[in-house]
Image 1 (tube, rainbow, N blue to C red):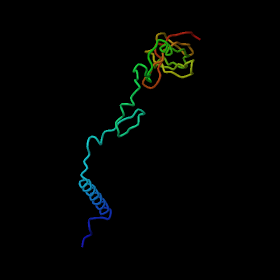
Image 2 (tube, one colour):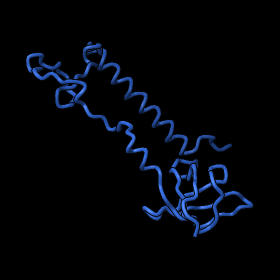
Image 3 (cartoon, rainbow, N blue to C red):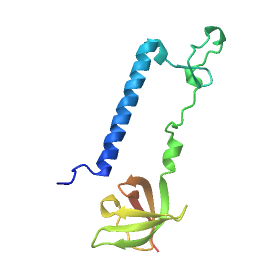
Image 4 (cartoon, helix red, strand yellow):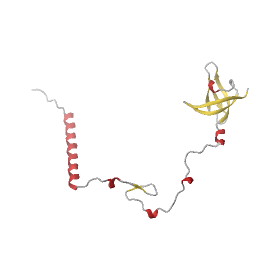
Length: 153
C-alpha cells in the first residue's frame, strides 16, 4: 500500500480555504435576507467647517463667513530681488585641482564646503584665493556658479 499524497500541511490549508469560503457564503446569505443594498447616498461623505468628515450635509444657515481668496497665504514665497542677492556668497578656495578641473570653496558665511567645476569659473582661481560666487543646486548638492576672483592671498 502506498502512502497518501496529502500531507497534514496541505490538509490544514484546504480546511482553512473551505472555512473561509463557507463564512463568505454565510455573509452573502445574510446580506441577501436583509435586502439592504448599498446605494450611492450611503457612500457620500461631507466635510464640515472644521475639516472633519461627517455623514450629514453641512447646514447652509451656518455658512456666514465669506473668505477672500487674496488673503490666503500659501507656503511658497514670492520671488524678490532681495532674496536673489542671498545666493551671491563670498568664500575661500580650499582645494582646486587644475588638471581634473574641480575643487571646493569654503563659504565664509556658514563654513559650508561648496563644489566648484572649471566650467563655472569666470576667472582662473587657485587655492587660498577669496572668491565671489552664486550658490546653485547641483546633482549631488550645492554648486558654486559664476565664480569670480575677489582677492588673491
